[in-house]
Image (cartoon, rainbow, N blue to C red; front, top):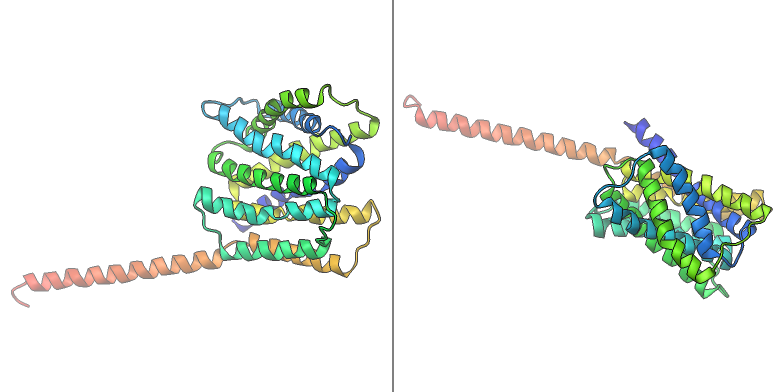
Length: 319
């Protein structure tokens, strides 16, 4: 059981790692003035590819649910992330988005009535502290619209992911991913046409950037993420999402030659510690619960047996 849980945590971790790389790709390779078309060009091809693999269309309420979840998790999210990636340094954008770990715990409590475990809360706090130490939270001179876009993306996706866990427990990850990607694209496409006109002309670098975002940071990442949401609690999935800024730091060191000093070492250590703590299996708590139930059962059985014996003695005239 523990091996299976660990396997799903590792699969889920593919998503934040891929998303963490998306900031660098967006900032370095994609056109800066087409956030709406950027979302469409990223989501629609990925959705069609996954739909070909899933070979399953929505039924009943899933037609409107796909539009709602697609708007929260894909359409609105991609546009806001695109804006944040263009207007903010990757480190600040990743720091703001990392608060989604705590946000998912809150919305899971409000919408799913799942009170977060203390370990998950502490893990989220420790991990967020590690992100701040690792990246530095210097908001002086930060673009206001970029900050608003980043926080908006974080809130929208947190609500969308929690609703996905609530509604989609019986839907496999492939069709779930396809429906949301296509649903978000359907909502976003007419807005892109009206607001930005024709789609941008792609250069070789931007085509490579969109190909990477479509195949890796969207199709693969969302399948992995929704697979995790079906099998892990939103709190655990949210804490695993802290790998997003860690990826940004690693890519900054490897690709851009950014410094990796003591703050980064301490920050990465805190983030990984927070993930380990928040994603740990609550075996001890479960063991105590089982023990308490077993003890309670023995007490009740002993009490019921004693009452029965007392009744027998009361009815027996020889006693």
